[in-house]
Structure formats: structure tokens, C-alpha cells
Length: 219
Image (tube, rainbow, N blue to C red; front, side):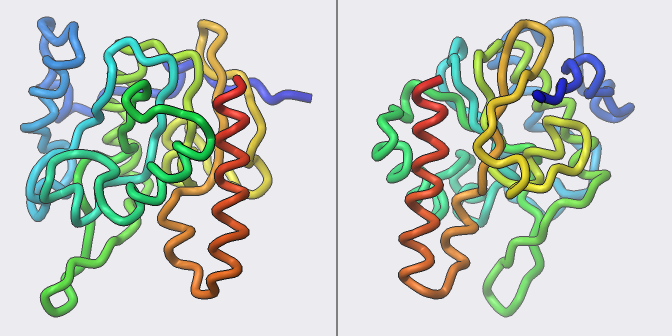
């Protein structure tokens, strides 16, 4: 039995600070991106280099949602350009999906990290940070109107569904999403593959990831 996913208008509530940043003119993706550059709705902007907004065609039928920018993305100002992005690109190619045809974004738009020496190490966004940043994600979804949304990892799945979703239990299943006949699929974040120590494990899990993306390509 397929579980009904909440409509986007049931999920997203505009935080007060983001409401101040939003105006009646933000009717295009470019305008929302400009507004997001100055978002101060949560403290993550203070240490991040910049807001990392989504990128891709404004009429994309397929959207991939990750967790947050990493170190490379924070510096470049673009999503999925670091090590996890390279894994993602390779998996897309094997699944027959052109990156230029998709829109790629994150649930949280600023890099959350802790400094260790000269390194900036990723820290997972907390529930409040995810909730606050959902305003920007829903504007992207509403303006693009995709047929299919892919949640890469637990943070993206939580942001899109409005509740915690165990990845392995939900993985690879197409479920209804939104009010206009859209669908959603949950899979792992490509950074998960980078954390596996054994080469055999990485190869096996990469193939599983590609299989999930082939479901997306077929849909």
C-alpha cells in the first residue's frame, strides 16, 4: 500500500525572518535565488562563505535534493561539485541521466561545519535548521513543478516529507508527492559511499545507488 505524502502546502511554513526577506516580486527562480543570498533566518550564514542555491533548468522534470553544501560547494557557490558531486555525476552517467537536464539543490543552503586544524568538517543540520530552510526548498519546487523529486539521504527525506524517514526502509520506492501527481524516491546521499572503507563495499553500494537512479530514469 502506497503511503500518501503530504502536499507541499501542508509541509512548508515560512519562518518570520525568511518572510522579511521574501517579497511579492519573487515570482521567478532567479529572484528567489537573489533573496536567498541574504537569508539570515538561522545562524548558519555567519560562518558559511555564501548561500549555495540550486541550479539547473527552470522547467526541469526531475529534481535531486541533497543535505547541505560541503566545503567545496561553499567555496564555489554551486551544489554537488566536490567529492560527493563527482560520485553523483558518475552514477548519473551510468544510469543514463544527463546532469544538464536536472535541477540539483540541497535541503539546507549554508555549509554547517566544525573547524579541526585547517580543515572544515561537515556537521549534520539539526531539525530546526532543516525546518527553517524548507521555505527556500518549497519555493524551488513550486516554481519548477517537477514530475519527480529524489531525496538524497535522511536530511533531504525529512525536509521533503516533513518527518524522519528511515532510508533503508523507504529506499527505491516511488511514492506520491505533492498535489499535482508528482512522485518522490528516497535513496542514499553519495557522500555515504565515500565513507565506506572497503573497496568491495564501495563498489557494491555504488551499484545499488545506480540501480536506484535507473528507477528514476525509467520513471
